[in-house]
Image (cartoon, rainbow, N blue to C red; front, top):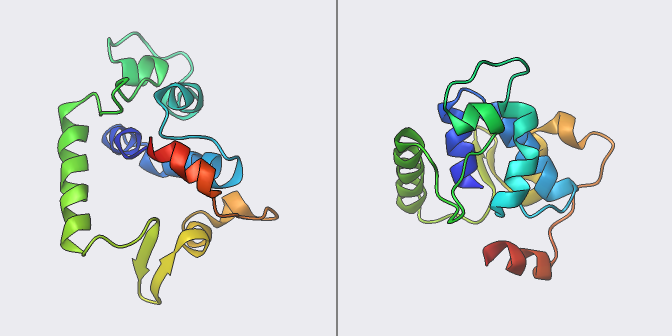
Length: 137
């Protein structure tokens, strides 16, 4: 998921992809760590209708991660490494942590603060232990 998001940021579509990925995981229960799931989700946001052939699989098909779940571009690879280093520098806070002027939000509260329009009228739930384990494989 982080490799896909890094590629989206590199393509200038980070906000749209983040909202799509968070909704797919937290609301729809999709395994966004699976490259096949990403290949089905991301074209709706990354591929522009009528776009000319550029030879860039990210822009043509929404293909943004390798089967090994790594980013495809050098820019996204280095961006991902910087994010990981910042996470380590913060002391490895828990999953989905949002730091802001109001303090630290985690899990469902962080999701609601990041993409409130995605959760209006819908219940945000924590993934089950089995879904968490599947995602980490």
